[in-house]
Image 1 (cartoon, one colour):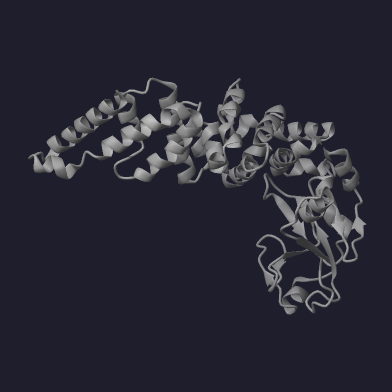
Image 2 (cartoon, helix red, strand yellow):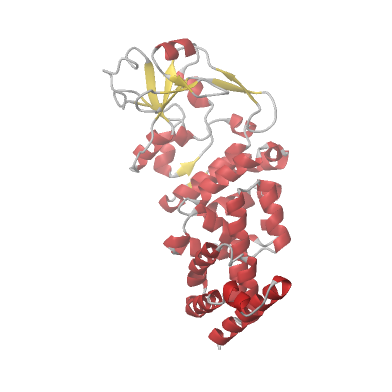
Amino acid sequence: MTDARDPRIAGLDVYRVGGAVRDNLLGWPVYDNDWVVVGATPDEMLKRGFKPVGRDFPVFLHPESAEEYALARTERKAGHGYAGFEVIASPDVTLEDDLLRRDLTVNAIAEAPDGTLIDPFDGRQDIERRQLRHVSPAFREDPLRVLRTARFLARYTTLGFVIAPDTMALMGEVSRSGELAYLAAERVWRETEKALGEEQPASYFTTLDQCEALTTWWPELTGGRLRGCLNAMSPGLDDEALASAEWRYALLVSPLDDAARESLARRLRLPNAVAQLARHAALSRHLVEGALDAAAVSHWLERLDAWRKPAQVSTQLTLVAALAPEQVDALNAAWQAAQQVSPQSLMAEGFQGAELGAALKERRYLAIEKTLH
């Protein structure tokens, strides 16, 4: 909680809000605190030494703790998408006004410095009921809340949480309205990346499927393909080496064909490293599901750019160990054998230019073939 002796806080009407209060009530560890300040102005926060960080609304960082202190605010829909809001942050905005603008009741609980909970929308009761429920019909005004609610379910489904039926109905309404299309791709990926890092990421995608949100941003996962893709993601849940959000995404899309996978990467504007890992994971899955012969292994190594970036092979061998542990030793041995064929040795034999490249390819192929047989 706040330290009443902190001169920067003294005299301010401050409440802890959001995820810290929610997770504390769930008995989960709290790593970050967010605060709302009622009745203050930006000038007052600056005079107290807080550092402004909010571009679109008044949020400040405490100069020592670096925790966020936001002035109480309300929002009014003024356009499309996540950014289509007019923010009102004046000293007469009340704490309840601020809590009313939040997405879910479990996130609309405030805690006073003495520990008293301010819970005007029965969020604590919803926590006890294990229910994710929207605060108000204004939920529909922010399409990002569809993704956030699905992400929260991915986090808390193991605790027995469900989405309230009327909230799921609102999520479907937002999906059908076309508002999801106005979200920035980077925001969609950020929510998806967070969801992929949760305990049950499959719940994120099944929820979006149920509320008809997949068709806007993930059409490649619709039409009966979702179940197979979620099954393909299972090694990312069982193997700690593959448990990152990036690996889970790569596994999720590995059953898709190249065109579908690249289309999805472009739409989500994926970071290059994530898109590349997805391509490589698909190559590795295809390799272990087919015949492990010299032609297949040579193609795999070429597509991985193995000779210039050998670390990419090591990364994919981690995946092979999870997908087909009985094949990893043979594949690693073939890779080691191929590496023994050096350009220098062939140049010493007199090869150069295009002939050198062809000879390298042939000798490496033969080394792989010999190892596999």
